[in-house]
Length: 453
Image: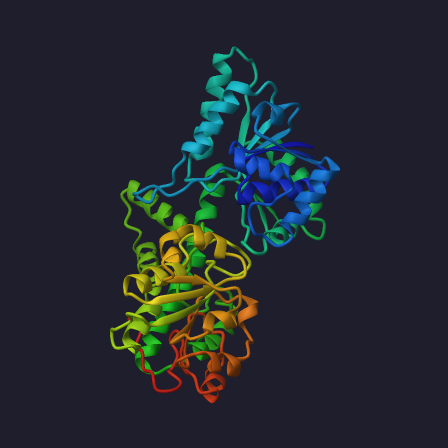
């Protein structure tokens, strides 16, 4: 099929590369000139394992073309995918201006009937609004055909997006016409040869499913974090509790790891958007408000633990931060817990030494002044990061951080204090190496007693 993907962001690039991999002719439209130039040079603008290779291969094969001209993408097109950003506005609602702008452009420039598919995360009713805008423009041009709009939300995990797209748990298609569902099922059929994982539903149900899925996962994270806070007051190890409840198949082990909070481009934004949608309907989303409040608090716990350990005095202390991206496998620092910690440490007068396998360039752009005056130093290795530190704080659980040489690290530090923001280390092992260890919702190993809020 001939596909046009509008937007070369995270979702758009993965979608374009994977569809091209299956033999479709894909034109990806990107209006940012710098990003477009980089893509045409063969550079991948985001860190996503395997994506750079796939983009390069499909670009060289001619299956994937990048352009800044929408008309080029619309020539003989069968399906148009909208994959532009829907950032949060000040009130938490989703900013639909980019989606609606694309709808207006399609109404002005489409020259043949095709299927328009919204892949952006949008509130309920957006696809209907997009269809109305496009078809109103078509009518004003005296064209005698109309287009259909379908919803096909993405469920991609940063760091595993290629695998998620190529072997999806489910493909959700929201549409009101059988022909649209059949066309999308045919497009996705190469990805679903082992078993049928397509769920066809109404437009509004598909739009809502995306928000509900992310809100539920965020709720699981905030729930286990709240249990961890209570565990810390009762001298209970949340890790033992996690294993105990996770063995119940109704609960499962996914997304019940206590830690220093969730971040990224999806969960925080989508929870806020769903809260905004509820309030617009006169509904009080009490659970979602609690999820958001717990996560906001959770991101402050590492700093509060440091502040308490050092008696409220952090001026001149050297704190090593391991992990800056909001999760492993990405360079994305949007709403990352590391930023909350670094902001608080810098404000308290501490000196921060930080390292991350992928996100240091993004952090450097965010903190030019702190880097300029050497209050924030970015280090290439975790060992260099720990050199002369009064404490090490693990924020992002990259594989490179899981089994370091702790004896070497202890020898490099001024004080052997380790704050484990993801509970990946063995408390007894760290204590045996002479470290004072503090996890999230875990009895303290050593002599440092810190209580979570």
